[in-house]
Length: 96
Image (cartoon, rainbow, N blue to C red):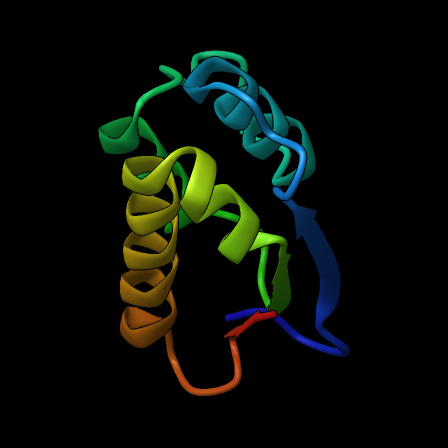
């Protein structure tokens, strides 16, 4: 379990134009390991292992949803699952 104040991360996905760009952003912002596979299965695995406590704010998901609906839906789903499976207060998620 993490201790102290939650690390705050803002994922601004509003300008993402491709699935590859999305995974590059996620890998960088969430500090995924070098072996990150740039796909949703790998994201699901790696996001459950990020340093906690963490507060993730997703910005621009509505814009992304119009451009890349599958990617927006998968991002939301994976983050919601990771948040719901984490101990209370360890993984907060806000979508704007």
